[in-house]
Image 1: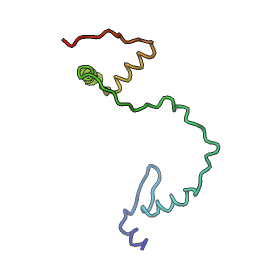
Image 2 (image 1 turned 45 degrees about the horizontal axis):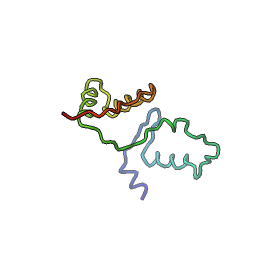
Image 3 (image 1 turned 45 degrees about the vertical axis):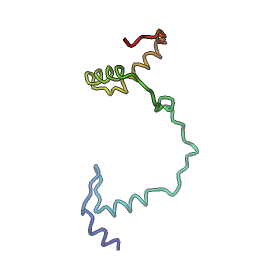
Amino acid sequence: MLDKIAALLPTKLSFGKFAFSSLLNLFMIYIVIMKEEYDFSQSVKNPYIKKLKKQVTIRLEEDVVDYFKVLAEETGISYQSLINLYLQDCVRLQRKPSLEWMSNV
């Protein structure tokens, strides 16, 4: 059965400096290298975990989104990243929002 499968596969595969006679050969090498169990008792916690982004849902006014989308086209940076950069800047500078209500006139 394996011979029939092997006959259908490419005769030579290359991955960087490694070449394999068939996909079956590559798979068999993978099985030999793969351990049945791994010991994570000495593993280290990810030091960048605090830097990971948290997904949130936020409602923004259309003109705010439009402003950042135009800026995104000018800079080549996604508008979501630009909003995040702006908010990071506010946090770093301890900038407080203006709490005065603006009329939509």
